[in-house]
Image (cartoon, rainbow, N blue to C red; front, side, top):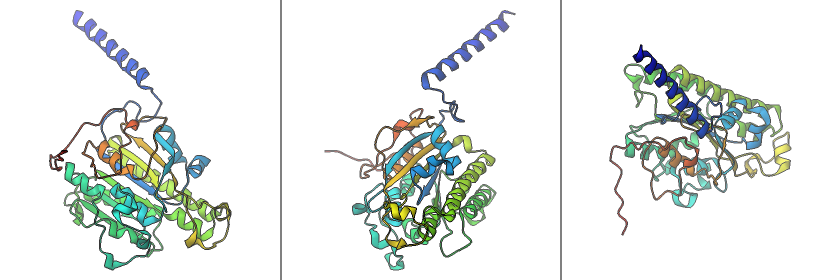
Length: 346
C-alpha cells in the first residue's frame, strides 16, 4: 500500500516538473514543442523567385505553418547579385563569391570548368562526423557544385526534362528513400535516410520570368512548390523519421526589384531582371523553438554552419558563416569522428 502511494506521489511530482519546465521554456503549441531532442536528419529546401511576402500572403500554407510553429527571419539576405549558381555555391560553401569564385559567368553552363573546388557542407559533414547527404537539383547548371563522392547521392531533374515538376521531385525523393532503406540500396551510394537532404525548387522563378509575377501561372507554380514540401513532410513521417528531422527553408533570390517587372503579366527581358536579395529563412522541426523570430541578421552563408551545429558537428573558421544557434531549444550534443583537422593559433 505504502509502495503504491509512493509511486503515485512520484508520478505527480514528475508531471508537475514537466509542466513547470514547459512554462519556463515557453510552450507554443508546435508539434515539436515538447521535443528538445537533437536532429539526426535535416531537409534543406532551397527556393527561387519566392519572397517573404509570397509566403505571408497565404499562398503557401505549409511554409506559413513552418514560420508560425518554428523560427523565422523574413529579411534574410542572399549574395549580390543573387544569381542561381553563385548563390547556391555560397549556400553550400559558406563563402562569398570572391572566395568560392563561382562568378556570374557560371550562369552559362560550361563542361570544361569541371567541379567547384571549395569544400562544401557535404564534405564537412563527412569529415567531421561521417554524415551523408542526398541532393535533388532542378537545374543542370548546379551539377558542377557537387563533386561525385561516396557520401553524396546527387540526382538531377532539370530544364532538359519538361515533365520535371516539384511533384515529380517529391515522388523521386519518396522512391529514393524506399530504395536506400531497403536491403542493397539499389545501387545508390547511401543505404539509409540521409543526414542531409537538399531539394531545389526554381520553378516559381521560371514561371514569374516567363509569364509575369502576378500571372496565374506564377501563382500555380508557388502552390505546387508548397504542396511538394508538404509531400516531403508526409514522406518523412511515413518513414518514421519526422520526429528526428529539422527542416530549413530558404531562397537563392526573391522576386524582381522593379515593381514593373514584378507586376507585369508578360515576358519582358526576363534574363535581365534584377532579383531581390531579400529571402526568407525558416527552420521547423526537432529542437527548434516555436513561434520564434530570429533577432540577429541572417545570411544565406549561415545555412551550412547551422546544419553542422544542429547535427553536433564541427564548423570551420575559414567560413564567413555563423550558426544561427538562437533557434535551438537545447544546445546540440557534440558528435564527431575526431577526423576534423586541429587548428593551432599562435
